[in-house]
Length: 379
Picture (cartoon, rainbow, N blue to C red):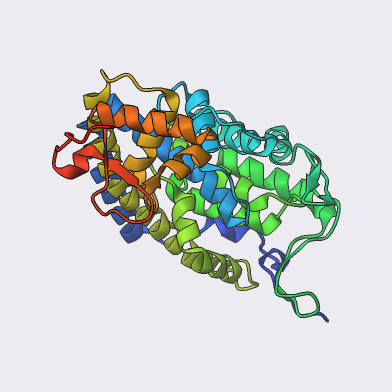
C-alpha cells in the first residue's frame, strides 16, 4: 500500500480543519497592533489615510504577484489602483498598463471593495480569468475560468532532480471539494475571522483547484476575509508584502501544514504572527504617508506638470541612487531637453536643488533636505 503523504488523504479531511486550540495570545498581539495603527489613522486627515490606502493596496497587488515570480510595474499598479478607487492621481504618471496588471488589480479590489458578496464558483472563475486573459500561463495553455482537469504537484529543483513538496487532490474531486469549502466559508460564523482567514488560505491551497494562480487567488480570499473581519473595504496594511519578506518560512509552514499530519494549529499561529508583523510594518509606512501629505500640502500652490509631480512622489518615497537628468528622461519617457526644463523649473520654484556632492554627472535632491535652503536657482 502506498504511504499516505498529504493532508487531503486523511479519513477526517477536511472536518478537522475547523477545529483548533485557543489562539488567545496571538490574537491579543494582533488586536493590539491593529489598535495602534487604527488609532493613529483616526487622528490623521483623509489625505494621509488615502496615501496609506493607496500604498498598501498597491503593495499587496505587486507583492502577491512577486511571490509567484511575476514582476509588475509599480507605477502602473499604483495608477490603476488610484483610478479605480477614485483617489487623487496627481503625482502619478498615466502609464500604460497591460491586461495582466489590470486583471490583478481588478481581482484585488473586487475582493476588498465587495467583501460582503459571497464567494462562489463563478466569482472565483472571474478572478481566474482576470489573471490569465490570454488563456495561457507563460507559453502553456491552461484551463481558464474553470477548475483544473489535470493532476498537479508543487515541485522545485531542476528537471530530473525535482523535489515534490505537495500533490493536490485528483481533478475529479475538485468540484465536491470546492463545494464543501465554499459552504464552510459562507456558513461558518463561529470561528474567529482572523483564525478563519488562516484556515481559508491553507484549505484553498490544499485543494489547489486551478492550473495556475492558486497562490494569488488564495491571498485574495484572505484579503476578503480580513475585510469582513474589520467590516471595511479599506486595506491599510499588506499581508503579501510580509509573506514575500518571509517567503521561505511561508512555504515551509504551508508544506508542513499540508502534510499527512496536518498541523493546522501551528499554521494558524504562524499566520497570525505574520499578519501582526504586516500591521506593525504598516505603522512605519504611516510616517512616510504623513510626510508626503505635509510636503504636498506645502507644494499645493506651486504649479507642476504630471512628470514633475510623479518624480517628486518618487523622491519622497525614497528614490534609489541619485536623481539625474538622464534618469528623469528615462522614467518619464521624455527627451533630455524636456527633463532638463522640468528640473530647472523646479529649481526656480525652490522645490529642487543641485546636489552638493558633485561627481561626473549633476544630480538633484529635494530642497527640504537642505534644511529649508531653496536658494539654488537655475542658470
